[in-house]
Image 1 (tube, helix red, strand yellow):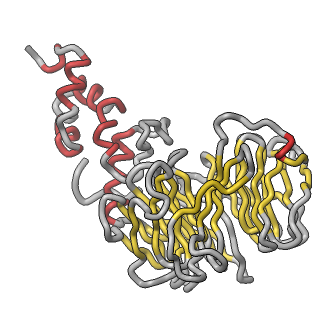
Image 2 (cartoon, one colour; image 1 turned 45 degrees about the horizontal axis):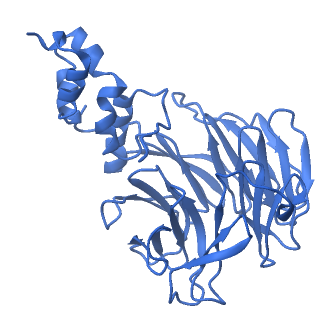
Image 3 (cartoon, rainbow, N blue to C red; image 1 turned 90 degrees about the vertical axis):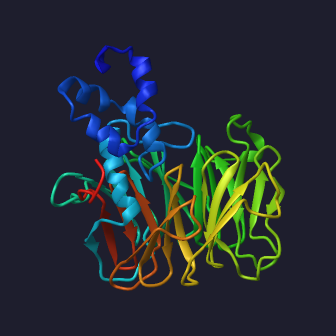
Length: 375
């Protein structure tokens, strides 16, 4: 019996035992085999073991429009640090820029504005000129978040501005007495933290305590400077608006948290001044993290991003250093230093590029090179 005559479910089961090199070689046998082997269902098991293929731990796919075989090929470059570097935008003043990516649009804050650029994956010039500019703050933009309908920004003037991505209309919300350097939003609920030591939760201009909440939003995490308590990380319940637990113990004074990333409703990653990336699981001990990774050069970690599976990327306080990490290993995989020397204030990545915002420039690392081995 020919291989192509087997039932598809049997073929999927057989091919699940092959690695990416064997699958690539098998696809060269004939046209019919090539067509079947290149299906995403064949490559999904392989892709789960690579970095940044878009297959999350829960099985969801972040980039369904890009063939998985192509993503596995690019993933080898992420693991090996094979990339080309470029400086996409420069500016004259030292700023604290922030980034977000939504599909093929990159949003970059510069001083009091947020500029939206289209990302052209296959063009020589990857970023277009800004096609939309969001403003409304009297000072610099500190943070901003996105959803399908709105861009929500916070500024050094203590205000929160909600921008409509469709109409361009904007609404200013009551903010804080000082700059708002923490901001998040889910299902029309906005949570903000300020240098004035207050955290505010709002929805549709009203106090959250008077509102019933969506069942999926039950808690939020708050990172502090760790000056008054031995723990810089606190979990608050949305139902009662009170702190239900503090994670970790015996942190040094000033070992504050600078970035928090939730991977699941129960697991979150943190980084900050004490040079560690930590993985916490709210279902386990509150006193000890599940895993931790130390920045080798004892630098503050300003920002953190994850692919939802095995890969993490961190930005350091010195020399524009971006590190790639595999959670299954204790040491970082790769290091990339950007010029000129500056903290990496924010980084974001998609399947093929990593974007890093420094004090005077926006950098890109392009991982689409042909790998030296494999498919």
